[in-house]
Image 1 (tube, rainbow, N blue to C red):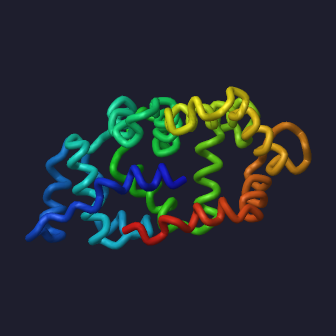
Image 2 (spheres, rainbow, N blue to C red):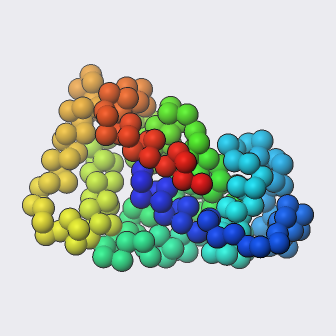
Length: 215
């Protein structure tokens, strides 16, 4: 969770002098993709108009067209993990933000997801994380999906994990995940099982609260 939020908010803190809401509304009409107006996005998210202005400037700085495809997203994300291969994890993260499954992330997709991660309720954050792990979107997390996610995280961290860990450590993490989450031992984790287990885990709860005041 920390890697997700930290990466995606890194570019949003750059402020420009002598800018106001009118400037940003005007800018929103000049890009290839025109997002919703600030007032509409403010109503749909937990961000103020000023915060949306800051987010939009950072987003447009990285993506002048107003739309991010997967390869661009991977390139941006990889810059934060120079010692590893973040491509697979970035792929899963991209799909979590691409809620319309059209192969691109628009500004609205970006701020809606970020609003949940930074300002959402505990349940909303856990639901978002569950859907990130539910790769095939069937409503369950199975062992294969969790194994892919864990290996993607280890690959992303690169030399900070390898070769310090043994080859079976990712599988050990998956086994531990299922011992904790799969309450009825049916081989898959449901959303409710995931939420209940996370609420009982102090480490998970701490990570959910870590970035609440990031902006």
